[in-house]
Length: 168
Image (tube, rainbow, N blue to C red; front, top):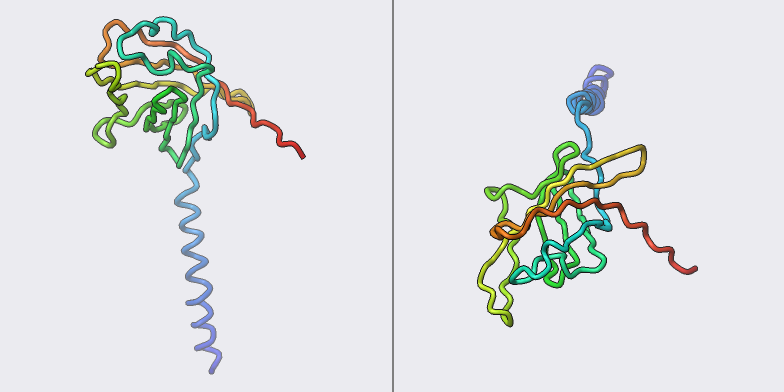
């Protein structure tokens, strides 16, 4: 193989992929990863306003209320520890967390309670902002039970639950 063919093969097999890699890195240099929210969060809120609401409001009977957040990029799945195991789909934009708009994914609705005769289905809205001070994060926001005029929005704050130590 002569030297010209060898140099051309080297440029083609090494130089072009290297240039492509540099172009990709430069094009993505402005991207910022979303804040990490995955894990379990302890909720501090007064759900007293939801006690006695027909069809039982979510989280009103959960003690202590917890949110389990699974995250993939900007998409979130929030699982509540209420008796129905409610799951909410949502997104995070910067430091704002909200449920996914209806057009992209259906809202979570609570299952009808067979034993209570409750026919009304309701959707739970979750809106929160992420407060980040150094490595410490917290969520502050509101829960809203849609379709319930007598259910006021519930303000809450949440902090990450520390993992328990495993015995060694």
